[in-house]
Length: 630
Image (tube, rainbow, N blue to C red; front, side):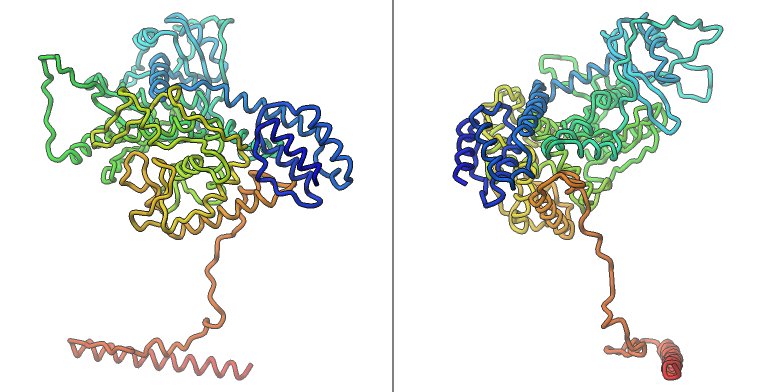
């Protein structure tokens, strides 16, 4: 025992890692230390002395032979180094800078429907006559399926030139719209076939294919530990580059549609598509701003404009209805247009089947863009944040806590805020994320944003200027276990979750779950969650915590897969056997006699009751007679 403690102390002095959580006990000392070492993700090399001590202690007791040896520890250490380097290699880009980059990327791109992925060489030769082609990316969608190639040019002027050279068919049954969505006509006698370019390169093929659940499961089973499982899940399900490009092209289509009358219009994507928490196939949230330019106080010429007729809300609803008609009647690829104008935030839902994206469009929700900025920043502060969010969301989906349709259950947005709040004050370690108030203190004048509704969305936008540095070196697996432990002990009955300051607040109103909206502080993000769903959430939290704590080896569905399993079958409605029989005649006994204003009605009702009562008596006699004969 003393030798093991000495080695743990040596490990601590070498790596600066806390060992206060190790619970040493007979017969399991070495296994606990090995699992402890495996869970710490510091990319350094064990010293020779520590390795030798581990080896000696390991060989002294034959009971330890069942556990992993020191060489496997070193192999896992090397795999950890690769994973950590990959996560830390991503350079931080401010949110609005990333949005502007993606918008510029969409401005320099066209979407072309082709016969197959092999059409890229001929398409490259044709497009290259209008300007230098930078990238070509293939994807397919639909049942048939339909094949598309995104062509990105070096210059935006190249797109204008190729659109000017494009044409409509002579079919009078189509609406001759002008957009960056095209199809590549096959060669014919009139159109000579182009030579296939030898320099053409297809950057990716079938880029929007979602990895099957069975394939993800196989990947997770091959991982070395839970931390690697979480990173594998994140990297194989997150929204990829082509998925982002398609969403910004979808936004660009809407923006171009209204640009004739509103040349300064912008369609801003927000939500999971841009905040770093989106997965493949996620919906696209859009907010359309008809004029995104501030007033020029130096100009003496002012545009004549039409005044609002009625309230601002009713006018906005009429505008949304008109935009919905335009999308339905004129935009190629858009279908299933649904107008939800009576909601708190009026939206239009539609499906763009050329990009295979579900869209939710609003016109008065810029706070959603700033919230996306906040979540994007939080996910960029530490490389462990997003893998943890993905793991928690996946767990909630698998055990039935979340639902694609809105309702009384917890949403992915609420789950994300729960993860961030936990990372601001983990149970056994230092904070990983700063509070929103900390970001606000470091805000510069250019970081000041206040919405039209007066919502203050001011906070530091550039992480390079943030002085907050975390000392937390917990592994992802430890953080996941602590997350479940944290909320299994949280007092949802009287406390609220708050990201503005890392403290528990008293709930200002009676709701099953209260999560303070970080930007609109008077709102409860989880107001929709029912008491029944909260109880279910707490049960599943405890089950997941127990599953991770009690698992000692990689047998069957281990690690993440063990918490993805539904352990509790839905309760079925059953009647107690003691109360299944009843006296039918008692149905007609009246505790409170009814007063009739009309005697005729009274006589008819009494006659029906007497007749029915007599029939019931006859049935009861027949049942008793039949029972006696048996």
